[in-house]
Length: 120
Image 1: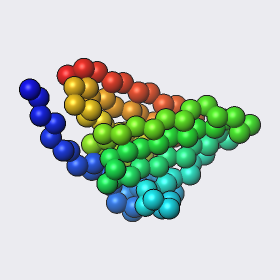
Image 2: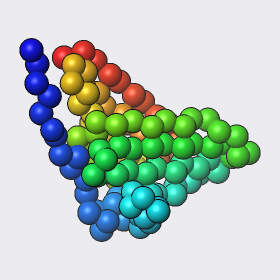
Image 3: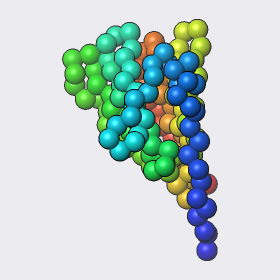
Image 4: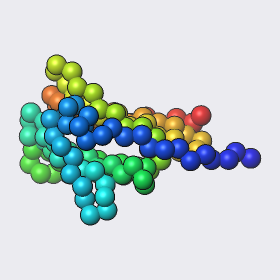
């Protein structure tokens, strides 16, 4: 019998988020941190994360306001932001018992989301 071990959701502090994205995270009514981001083509992404609930939500709309993606995921274990000279990224690791995964979000120059989940 496999026993699940609670894993902490490691998240950067607000200053690290600002340094990587150029945006300060806000808080919603539940205490989750929220980032409102936009790429060069006018697409927008609302990224929220809750370290206590170990969850993330990605809401992506195109330049006309049409929803492209609304994804909610629990069991997050690590959140990181990276910023280079030409692109900015968010990476989220997940551990869901028998499955692990990584979601990678490219913020600039153009939004994209890549999600991988695999059995351990």
